[in-house]
Image: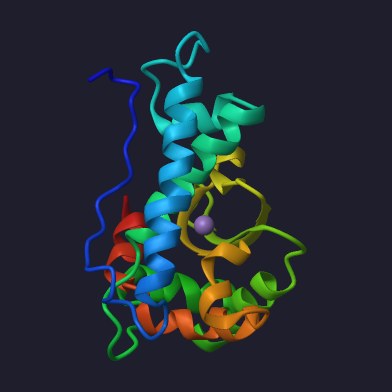
Length: 197
Ligand code: MN
């Protein structure tokens, strides 16, 4: 297999494990069809593009057009699908990340409210992100389409996908309800580990 052949990240849980926050049907389409299509499109576009052998992060920071769109969506979905845990008691940040959230947003509740507001108000398709700058300061960003804060030198920590394919089967037009429910499945150990790297 060529080094520039990408594949979807392995799901760290079963396709039905996130229900009822995200149904098995949505995971089947979102992971099995949408993410797979981005992977197939990028693998088909790479030969002769000059990006063969580069990492996903390098491609996202250096490319544009179709290569960028598909590479960005693969990176974004990799971070998205690996940040969840099976539905259960909602978790909360701990340690340095918890302290930084209080320092930069006032409280965990204030942070969640701002994050949901930015996700709900993002026009069209895109992603809302929690990211950190090189000094560890936290910011919430809205990125259109396949955008990722990595493109501006920020470290991506947590993301909610606001493309309709992420929620339409379960929530139809109720994007804010979907965003509010996602806190139940965020794996804060994963987010802390991204922040600490
Ligand atoms: Mn998506």
